[in-house]
Image 1 (tube, rainbow, N blue to C red):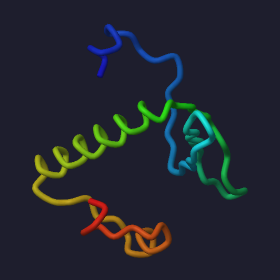
Image 2 (image 1 turned 60 degrees about the vertical axis):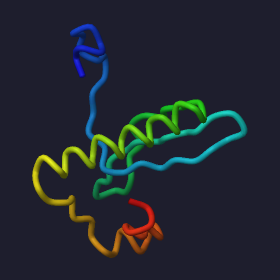
Image 3 (image 1 turned 90 degrees about the horizontal axis):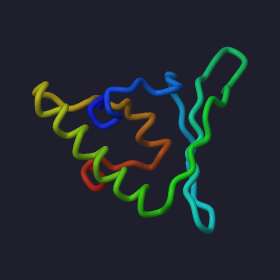
Image 4 (image 1 turned 30 degrees about the vertical axis):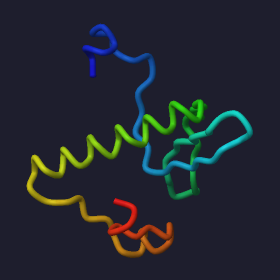
Length: 93
């Protein structure tokens, strides 16, 4: 990844364990945050064009599938999370 950035370190780095996202008329918003004892704490709002979101989704899927292939097993997502988000791994993955 540093090759893409010309060897530079990003100005801001953080860990996120929650993300909320949704479209507006012209952009997609992704709100990253962390869950703490007092609830969710927002950390960063990223706004992307619809085209950028589509390419990002395709590339994320490709990278995760390759990561799973290299390790020889799929990432296990708890059933409760899949059900809450209405995700069907056979159809969506």
